[in-house]
Amino acid sequence: MKKISLLLIVAITVSMFITPFTVHAKTIKEFEEEVNKFTEELQSKENQIAANDAEVASIQQRMVEISSQISEVQNNIDKLQQEIEEANVEIAEKSTQSKELFQYLQISEGENAYLEYIFGATDITDMIYRMSIVEQLTEYNDQIMTELSNLVEANKNRKTELANQQTELENLNAELESEKQKINADTAAIRESMPSVQEQLEAAKSNLEYYQNLGCGENEDIQDCQYRIAQQSGGSGALPPSVSGFYRPMVSGYVTQNWSGYGGHLGMDFSNSNKTIEIYPIATGVVFSIYYDTYGALCVKIRHNVNGSYLYSTYAHLSSFGNISVGQIVTPNTVIGRMGNTGYSFGSHLHLEITTCDWHTGGGCTWSEYQHRSVNPRNYIGFPTSLRTLWSGR
Image (cartoon, rainbow, N blue to C red; front, side):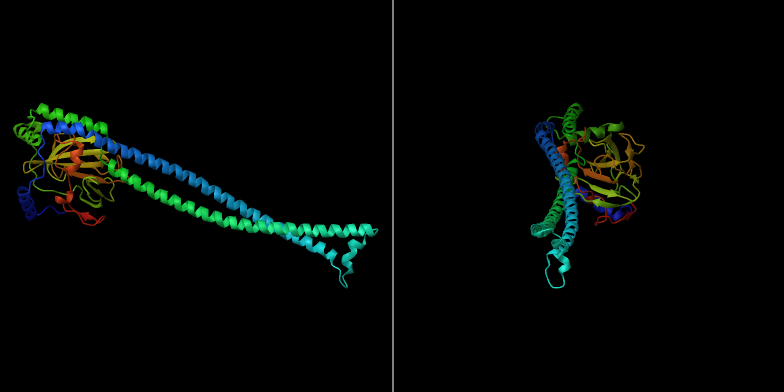
């Protein structure tokens, strides 16, 4: 993206003065109350993830069973086909035998030669016996052929039934796979940047202790308190330089997923054909935190000063960190890391979040409120409206 034009900068600056951030004043007392009540919400998310994992495990087990059933059905189909082929061979053999035996029973003019077997009898009793044997053998062969024919027909019908069953099982398997993907996607949306319950509780308590030690009054807005003290202090706790413009975090790339806000995707995702492309801050600010999230994603968080209010930008799933440290002032030209695939991720990309507070120590809110304070990055930065539309320039 090209650098924001002067006219656009003026427009954004004016809008910031006219419409300040919507930040509910939060006192230490309110923060303490929130710490005490939000545990249930966090546990609910953990329970949902656990339920999703259990359902996925159940689906996977069912898919294993179905695959076994499909193999068994296929084996039965192969076995039936073999029986059909063997029965057809036996039918052909019995048919030939019956024809040969029937020749001995034929009594017609010019065909007395067929009676050779019968008239080879030594006496009338032997002749009757021989005729009886021939008839019985012929009837037996006819019976066998009928039974074999019925078997062939039954096997063909059974083959059709098994083929239909196999198709049903394969369709069910496909449905289960689709359902598993939906559940995994739901889990991914919950997990992408959500810290564990224990981490959130520890951070909330640490935040509370931080503002108490900072000297904020029980009923004083903690963000105002922190901003006031930062103005008075120097060093790493000093107020970040004012933002003079916003930039894209990569020199080129494309959007892979949009922001949907609270209850959904808290940021925007970007990617590039260069899977380790350099990542830059979206604006001037101070490095607030460098950390690994619950699932091992490399993350950098930067605090920005926008007309007297804090704004936080988070860059997740990095493959490596830049040469930066907490408290360091960074500009849009500072390399803070490289795009990657760390943590709960399914491909190399950058996850960018923008919020008006942060749940880490000194960020002024719990994770619960952090989600409500999520801001659409498009409010500050121009990105192509369509997914996977390549941009070039910051």
